[in-house]
Image (tube, rainbow, N blue to C red):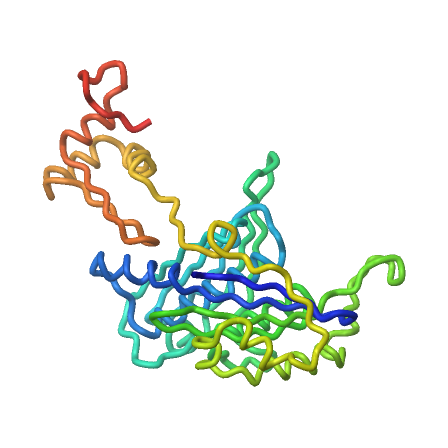
Length: 322
């Protein structure tokens, strides 16, 4: 079962999290395969690593709304998106417009001509009048304009540039598991420093540097195959580690898609009757597929007639989409 583990290092300004997406990640890939719309292997790896990273980031900020992690650019992968809700329900998708070579990394997929970007959006569940989602954007390059090859490097750079937080992120994914380990320096706040983050600690805190170095010894195979207890014991057996109860099941990371026939119906109504009727004449029915879960919704001429007929005027037994 998919799970998320939180932990801190007693007496040190460092926290950590470990996530393993197993059944939930396999469900994502199985749905795409069933819809005959499977992604190339490098894209599956990218999306798996992004899903693990999104769960870690959402859990670390405790945000009441959706965290949307996007990478987009000028390569064969136009866009890759992960959306994680505050209850850790997640969904992913990508738009592939060209050939993705085997073992392609971030530059080859999204940043061929240097135009790639990473955006993180925080979309509140409840918005005040005039409130808009917060979004931070960074390029897919490092401090010296070198193209970054891993999504973990992109996100570490984002956290340093946008949040002034030292972050070590280890990510891995295959067709069975998507997993991630996050080690982060906690900003010290309070009366002692007038409530300001200790930005002068960036890159200098020796405790964080030691723990990040230990985390970086974790191999891809270990992250994908070892259970959480084994990983944490192997890395931090000499450290003052304090763990919290793992989050699993309905309290943990899991796949969920918010698409529905009703939402698709409302979208078709927004297109207008003439345009929808033209599709019916040309194709015999309207087919709309969800980019996130692969489900395809079909509307024939009768369904379309019901959509555009006010409920009181529908014949007995008709089903309206409100």
